[in-house]
Length: 228
Image (cartoon, rainbow, N blue to C red; front, side, top):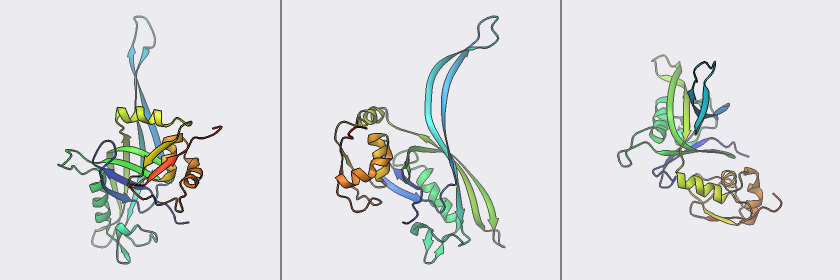
């Protein structure tokens, strides 16, 4: 089975429609960190030793990890988009392609793209909020051969989509979803059932021969889960 790599898919619209491009990483992250900020306001009474905390809101989820851009040619499994013939493209090209997908301002929508991160059963929708690049290795002319990027993404979901997601996660009704570019079956199962591990049953119900490559525009049926 081929190694699946983290893919960042860009969309022009906040409902994650109108495909705009994608970036597949050269090397999968070694780890990633999820973080949620819970906001409180403190009000300290006269004579008290500690403030009383009043709940305000729960912020969006953040995810952070480190990406590697490598131009040494030592990585044997580079995505086709980062190759030129039999050679991997320069680090500067890789970084520029990443920035175009994730952080460049586009006048047509007056902002950077909305992003969907997918990697196996992992799915995250949001925007890039922080990018720091550390250049690590150079050739004799000073051209970078390797760089590491620290990236942070924050979730971004429309309120009506949040309500729809809660409704759609009901396990006792059949759901129909239209495949979009970049969709993966385990991630779709996570949306419907809150569990990515039903992808084998869903594939069987839809008579899918290939689990990794879903055709955009195809309608998939997600049947009820019995005794979930």
